[in-house]
Length: 229
Length: 260
View 1: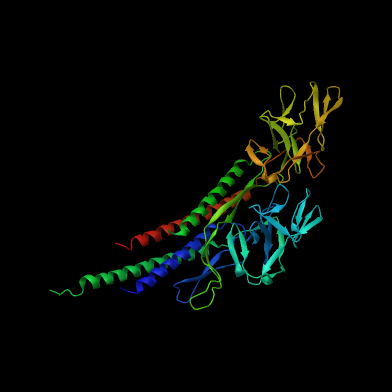
View 2: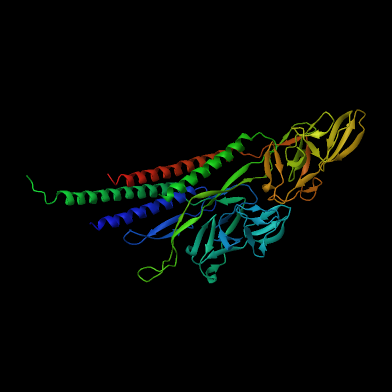
């Protein structure tokens, strides 16, 4: 049998994976702080070598809600989960019944001194990430950045887990916190649509190539050796 | 089957939820004391097909793994307790809360909370809501009252025809550690929940509570322009994820047509 057909099957599986990835990006086009994924390929374009996350900034929009914060610049908000420390860019916070600052999933948002408990007064989060209640400093948001952000693995629910060593965790510089703003998803609809069309058409032409090989094989099996009358 | 099909479907149902929330906000644009909601989303779990750091056939290690996401999931529909606009009504029992806090009323023998301060009097002189639920602590306006005055701190004074004033009680406000966790019952009513924490009572104007504005009602805090923009965003996102579903369908059709 033809070897070509197996390469083509691999190639069509790659296009399916590209499509799965684009589909996930599109589904998260309205997820706060979402960062799109990009598939990387090895030279022959026949296998996927990895997914990389594009940590480019998403648009920052005004919401007017005092518990919304957006990170302008690099860095992540540190979150405490039952499974350990996680990082997020989703700054749509809530309060729990103990008036701790938590994420939408109820995970504690960490300050430099642990969980942040908000008083009854007016809440201000300034550009440096200091949390103030009626102008009284409570704590500062614990922000973290990484030497190699690609070592962050997405865990779902807008959380990242860092898979590198602690020496790779660096302090955040030149990042300002915007209270009453949210960072939206950095997925660009046009770009993803074009990528989807590209993946689809490549998939289509691979299938045509499989059909051609099938036809050639069929001719060889059924017609060769027949005497022309 | 294609994973992308289900990711796209999760995107469509997420946008549908956004539209549901926006539609409810818009429908309540003239409901006094109404607080708008916002749907927020998170990404779903990821399927790791290749682990980062796993060895490759050439003896190296994979610098990045392959992770394919599974779409989006609603993280919550969040009530936004920003102040609504005030509308002057000249009605002496329209009491707007200027700042934080809720009125407590009894509805079907249950303590519930509301910010809708358009009170009325019932046949027995009790101060009640539009549904006839009594304001707590209970307060009766004596017969022969011509005029009622409520000051900023909630002290209620009734004046009779001779201009003689008598204090008949104090309105209390209640606040919660996490008001966004209150359970919406409809009819402008909210119920305490595990997430909201326990209510604490106080005099209006103290302990971070708001003050009472007599003769005003608090309008809905829904901003029509903002809702319209969110609606456009949601509709377009719905459209684009539906295209992904169509594409998935076409890809599967092509694969099916391989075998003739």
